[in-house]
Image 1: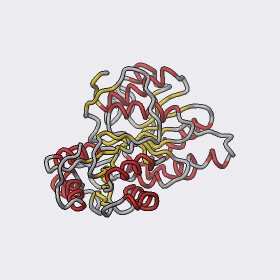
Image 2: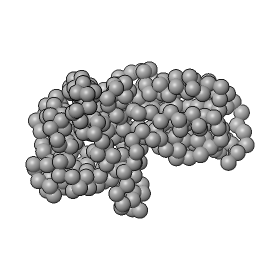
Image 3: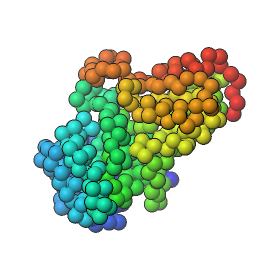
Image 4: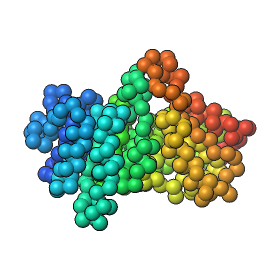
Length: 332
């Protein structure tokens, strides 16, 4: 095990898969050296593999997605980097109406091994058009898989799995995670898409999250522990498909549920999780389900206003406290 940054784990995954399989290549805006991508994930790859396999593209997200889709259905395994998740709105027809449908419409004769790598989120004053969390849009579409890793190890293992997947994957990173460090195996570890991870066990409440909010959930759990509240934290890792079984087993133990994501509450993944738990595990609940998300507003450019809009660990703590009015003795 080594301790490396999130961006370096992503780069390792791409390098190893390009070495393993010559049909893998990456394309996007400014991804070649010396720039190496907006967040430096692809730095060094064009020098190593050449510009045939690490390709700069025009500033056209529609062209990037369309060309990558064409390459995927004709035998290649493209990784298409879209600089911001917000900008995938310019390529959404190719992703939603074409990539997600072709395997089904061809009766399984045509595979679409396509990865759309992009990033989202607030935290560095990106403004209203560069920091939205739109993952629920893509999770709503049959035929797409949506992966959102929170740690360097998961980023590497899930990106490798996404590249080897024969269906289109929207792989969403978070701009505030690129510099975080974590232990990553030096072995060829490929994680399963669609499997959540219990990163902390607890007895009093289940906190379900993904991407950057996993780290806010850990902060919240640490704070709650001081009050005698033991929180179990589940990192979904993948929001489509959704690992509802892991959530239900946890709720059957804790009997309380808080769902936290950076996206706005309205229409977010938290609503889907809550609906599934109510349908399949209602009798296990001892309190209403709480959802935590950002306020329903375009993202302000001002750092102070941005902080007011976006949720953090304090909101998770408040949500837990609202369904556990009296702190109990720690049970683990």
